Image (cartoon, rainbow, N blue to C red; front, side, top):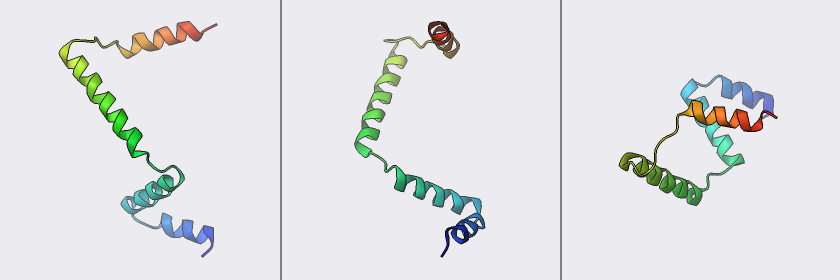
Length: 74
């Protein structure tokens, strides 16, 4: 089967099935790293706990981006 035929067939699939095809192809190019995913999930849980407990204070996104723009404006 030629590549263009394969693409045409994939395009003819329902949206849900195309999503599965695309996701599968992308995962084959960049396989998930489950150890890294677990570590990021642990960091996210810890940070959420710190926010909820009041140990750390959230900074509004506008303030963060404003400081970034100031820092790199030159």
